[in-house]
Length: 143
Image (cartoon, rainbow, N blue to C red):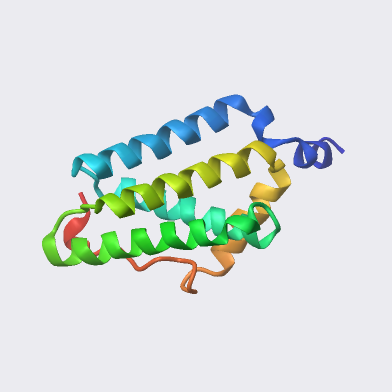
């Protein structure tokens, strides 16, 4: 019974988790803007994008689908560019698109339940390799 009740609890009730998540996402974004991002930071932003899209599929923020798609495309372009130049470097437009994506993700976190997050994670894992999962980061950019 406790597990059922926990699943119905808003994820925002878990302030420490949510604060840690937002700090980690913001730190990843900051490292990207500073040109110091490594695979781990970009992976975190990709995961955020995938969760955001999954939650939209469940009806959370679906009216902002364009913002999510723009953010996902920005990440795709950043990864593709990094494969050519050896560094994760966003354009100004991509930074704005990613900021919108982060705002959407944060808004979703304010309204979803623990169960919604579990469903989103399961959805992303099941669809690995499908279109919502961005390309693998080239090996020479790990570090």
